[in-house]
Image (cartoon, rainbow, N blue to C red; front, side, top):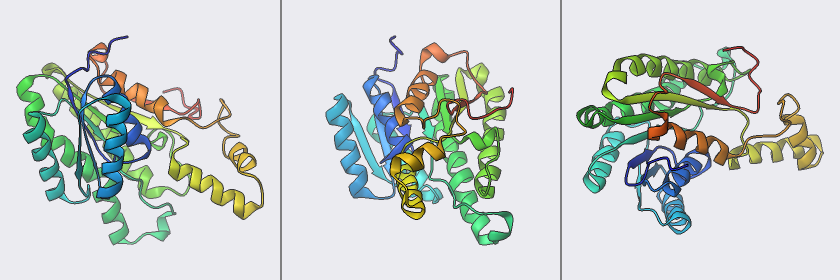
Length: 263
């Protein structure tokens, strides 16, 4: 299936590793010109070089801290200076720390707000004028299955990822007449480097093998396995395409069937 992404410009946030990297690589394989960003310049450049080798695509790497408004403004300005526009925006950021309501003071809530919610708001705000002028755009937010089903001991993530979904649904209604779609993708347990480290740590703590710890972690998933980053990336690439022009305002889990709600 030709997704019609050749020559489109995609900006993928927090893309030096994990889900962001997988999304950037998939869009590059479909022929998009891709801009990456992350805080750590050395790791980011290594990722950009790897995606260039894998795909032959034009890849731009820009170090940026997504909790800083000025970094986001500079990031989008540099992408537009290089490529002329941003057609596809994939918002993404590392999750805030886990814990219960009593664990966090005002400062912890503020930091999580800047990371999880305001990073998405600012990125969308920065690219939207160009999308509106061209009457075409794709905005895809990487959130979490917590948008559908709040997760234990993740109060900060549960609160602010749901807020991103609320903004996305409102924007989807407002922007649909302009040919701009806005959707959320919601990964469940996905075997990224971060999750693999978590499972390895649990295995060490419990004195079991990695395979045993992984089996325990996936016992509640109907598919009995974790997702692969490229499986989420495939959905992102489709939602970014012309083939998905009539899909907007959706929140789609990629979770092996973990979420048990009907909607």
